[in-house]
Image (cartoon, rainbow, N blue to C red; front, side):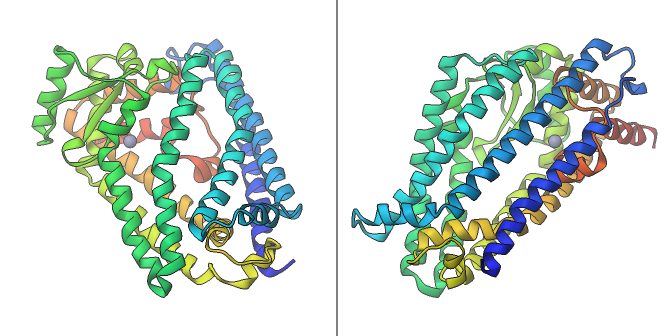
Length: 413
Ligand SMILES: [Zn+2]
């Protein structure tokens, strides 16, 4: 076993253990008594249901995580990578087609093997806790559409990267960087109007109090929107959410129909003000720029390792290729990706607090924001008291009690 293999193996096991420890600490935080802020809102029976939901999901996460690790180790040390390579090469297509076939088969097999887990999560776990609204026909249609979309969008992207690294020499990484960036921006630009409607219905919010309240608020903070959209989230789950997507003239604010059903106008306005806060505070621009930067770093490192003999030796590959180098580098990159991910989560939590503050300062209605957060937590069975280490590793938003505390701090000052 060479150094590269050792680093990758260590990273895989370390990641599994670290998440296991975080899960264990998180479960040990569970208490029967309800936090002060939620007394009178959270029915004790529902609160104990939320704790069972967390335990079930944690246990399920362990099973899925261990299965994935076992799968990759079995394939790796069983010599699966060279075996598949030999087979796809035997058809004697050029490097592009061979590469696409190699990667396509790996992705397809991985997706098929993880299918039982997603079926169990949707139709057993979510069902048991009363969230699931997905019918089998929706599930199967989603799967088919997802596969088709992955092929349509993924093939040109992968083919481009393979082509540059095959033929563009030392310039490949930054040609790729420009190409991938433009491609991603184009996809994000058209996603709200062309891609998302493949999976959900988006309808303009009906005329009425809510719409006029939103439009007049948007005007007051100088945020140009023509319309707010309602998405049929209830088609798959009773959980609720709101989000902001796209940019330029395709930009959209979207409310789940489930959110509208469960909240007052004041609460919905507070939630939307939070979303607009992300835009006004330039968080969207920030995350796009950081994503582009990260892509550049990754492609540069890829260019250093893609033909490094040790990388191929680690996976018992007798013949070098761009496509296999791409996959192996992805595994070598995962420790760095892990640290970048933690940094991005920290930044995201900071931005969430800033967006809450923006909402409270501009609507001058901290009570509605707090009520909205409480209702969201109860309806989605969120964990009220996650362990700080678990939050550090996994949370993109601060835990709800911290958000409430911060909001109350803003409204007092
Ligand atoms: Zn947010």
